[in-house]
Length: 481
Image (cartoon, rainbow, N blue to C red; front, side):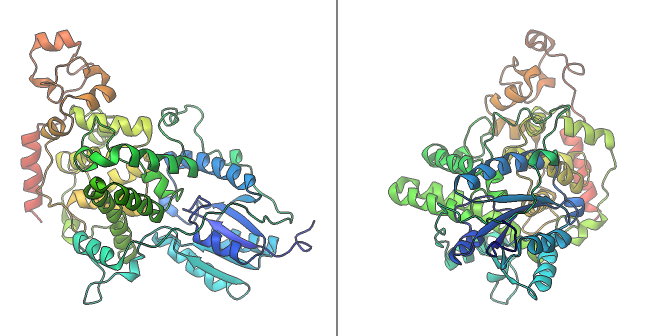
């Protein structure tokens, strides 16, 4: 059947909403009673320097693989295309003779500009509608009493809670009325999103199950397991104390509304979970706050939010940066964090703060270099979260940690990895050291090092810089602002 003979479909353009449940754009399309055609467009052009990094591309392949099967099993069609959205979306609209184009909104600066231009252009021909499928509270809906966007997290989140987080997820899609016309679709493998030689992502496989089913299982496992101890366990590096939902949320395999609904149900059913639920929901709130910042300050990923930091005397030290990326700084908890990232595409949130602080304040390397490294290596690389969090650590962002708050990587390790399980897993050359020295191996005497099989400066490096010296140097630099 030709596209001309087939009934005009509703084209649903998927972006960071790779799911069939609680998908407002998809639900609205289905409610029109017309055939529905799903589209995912790999647009590396529009994003510019923020095109997806390697770890994100691995996740995207796996997620689309799952979604293609999911859509097929429900009677629908998901077509894949590659190219700049400004050219490719109108082309697909024309090829399928779409009656309408629906999408869920994105909030990255390049995406909002792209979507606005497309809506203006295509609205002259067809119905174009956008929906909220990614946030609890969209950035323009929460303002201070003076009408300004919030710059501090706590009052922002209080305002969100007062506004209400009770929007019920929209009904799941059980059957899709697929479009019967002819249209070309790329083969997913032709996009070459997966690394081959070498396959640096081989450690991702046992850690993650991308896709909507994997997201739902991760949420259920968290509620049934780690949620009850979340307030205390979330900072413990050697403990499975977090939800690990961040990549699923970033790719929209699960919505924040679904997460909130499930957490609230659990807290209602078990009153002892109330405080843990509130603590976890505040972390969802930080994600909302990050998007609020990015929307109102679109330069956040590239410019200091506090312009006084424009004069900061950053050091240009490629050797130190490379040592940091490889997990060879000589500080075990920092090195464990960086190796976890390289192996799994993920890093524990407490470890992210420690590793970022070390790069910025011990090595005095510009936060933007760290941001770019995370962008390429994190499976949950999210422009809003990544930028807001790096600037928070640097002290240059909104509601940021003060610059003079300099994490001591030794005491951070001793506090949040008490027995050294985290270090032993990711820095195995130190695994035989006693807990007393696992975070400060240079203080162990020769006999202890020899018994543990550790040769400092050989099998494991000595610290790049002494902590006390680094702290003084960093504070002196800050004083120059």
